[in-house]
Image (tube, rainbow, N blue to C red; front, side):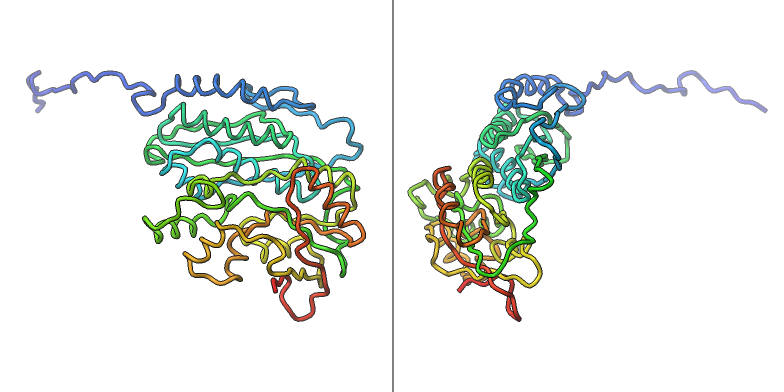
Length: 356
């Protein structure tokens, strides 16, 4: 009834060598080495309020006691497809500045002082030198903005990203007195619109930028605005924090707008009250070689330029005409190029923002 089987038929799998986490593609030692390189960079960004920074499970920050009724303002963003050019051109040291700028400039729009920043760096295989260059840019952006780099995450995920590529995300928190929050509610006809010059394309519109590079091929210019072509395109997003905070302390600014994706046409309406419109004057700010080249290569009209790129204006300030001159002077003393680019009017049946 029962049969026995020879031992030779009872096979066992051959013993296999152990598999470590490193064999699976995650190098813990490389991650530890990166943390050690990050720590001195982060220390340079420390400021009042930091209770515990890099290395713990959570970073601790105490809102400075000079705030009577602090309201926290948060923002998060990435760098977008500008990273594709960073990979292709091996230019990693400034995209971290872009990452910081995209978030801190956003919280600034509510009148907030950026307090601290956290970053997320994800890759398929960690290259310590590349990651350190990126985080060095993040630390530099924080330093220039007066906010602390108090934590972050480095994720090595084999198979998730092609070799040599990574993704970035950032998160900023700022504070503003409850009575000083900028809402744009007081914007009225006759107010002036001041434009602060951008440093270049910043971090929006790079899907079109990359198509322009592809279309131009070997006919791409060697220089733009006195800079080598690649440098001109990769110029990091301008950080407006310190100059604008100084102007906010000195002048009754009514609204700010960070000109990111959607350009002037899509971002200014976000800070205008119902029934108000911004009438901008074409030619009231300088035209850079960079944006002229992009428009010519893409073959697009002025309206498309103004809803795709910042087109030379990275931050907009709305202020009563009586205070505009003094505010512009304060901003210039803070290092900004400032242009009177338009005024506020009742909207009527037209568009919320026009450039004529």
